Length: 187
Image 1 (cartoon, rainbow, N blue to C red):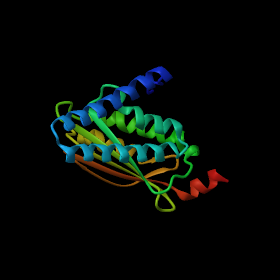
Image 2 (cartoon, helix red, strand yellow):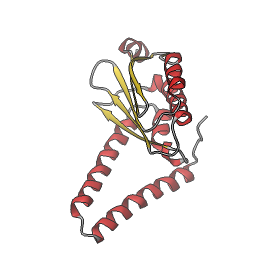
Image 3 (tube, rainbow, N blue to C red):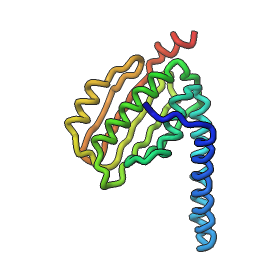
């Protein structure tokens, strides 16, 4: 089970994140690297837009998982993006957070802590089905365990994995939440 943050803890972590971003801008300003300052500011804007879209999905625990993932010591860095116009995924909140927690835990167990490991989760809302893309880059040292986990968890409630590629330095998973399930739960 993931840690549940108090309001004070959440504010402390958020303040720390913002101070890091401001210090990065300030350092680049002092070096007169205006191109880099503009890149950092643009990245902050993009991250804020994705965060706003994520919170508008009305899947609060799933949003909390993604937004606070880096607040604990981990050897995987997580990013996320939301494409398309937000729609309610409230009915799938428990399913999404449970599956993603299990997936991320498995990746942490099977990733080498001696290299930089990254996961990007893309939530694609542009079609009638909600599609999720999980893109891992790093070093997987237990490929057979990863394959076994994927086969065991390829169907979980309304979430279905439909494609995956596994190699030592990358893992790509594609999943959908069926529009049939979404329609039934929005009625």
